[in-house]
Length: 204
Image (cartoon, rainbow, N blue to C red; front, side, top):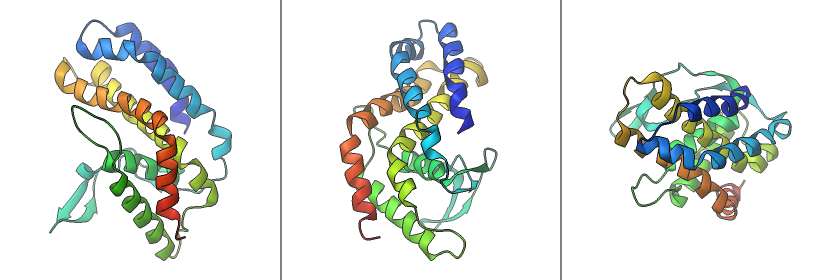
């Protein structure tokens, strides 16, 4: 979670670099939205304390899995792995795995969200050393989803402004638009998301 506190300065520096490309204009237009989301996330720092911390992947998405016969049989890319809140890894995986990728809309898929969360929680309960989600983790999954999405915004913008030499504007707009739009979607659908979480975990 310490990384989140660096985003305000990082994004402010990117704002100074922003020109008039499509990605630049969208980033500048939505900079206040991003800043507000960072502040809201930082407000939960103390409330997260005490949640289970484990070795986590920190980049768990479909592209980092190996498949055989449509089943995941391996995991790749442990560059970002560290000891941190397992709830962050779960939230990041949910954003990655159940997002709607469509030019016309943004959001999370209800059926896949509930199935993913139920399966994760059930599997933890079947392991010897890993407990199911705690009441504290259930309570703060929603704000952690918003924080996880901010990490994706950071990766998008860092690639665009720092890592990639002469980034392709239309290609990066697809990712930057998606994850910035997700900030508004999560804020607008908090009640829905709470019901999805309750539905996924109701039997436990």
